[in-house]
Length: 100
Image (cartoon, rainbow, N blue to C red; front, side):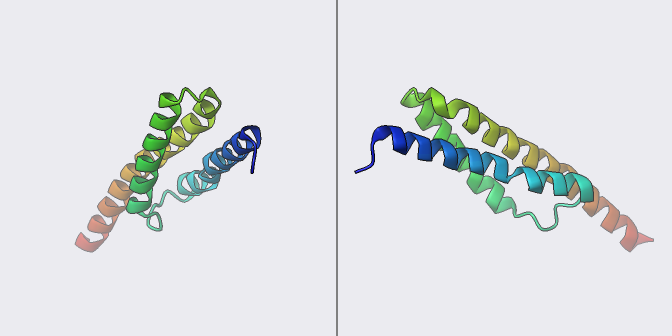
């Protein structure tokens, strides 16, 4: 059986990879100013998942998960804001193109 310390290390690594994993997507969205390939359902699922994860970390007082969990939440907040910003911008441009 795996010791608690090794299980904690695996959890920390997995959450850290999850947090870092969104950064290339955020960079691409900012660079291209487009979110057409980003799934809103994916963002919603990840927000729910991270909310439950952070609640669990707080409930069990697992302070080692606060920083990577917070970075994940920040990534998802940035993705949500960019998604709302660029979807609105892209649909306005599309409407203007169709009307002219």
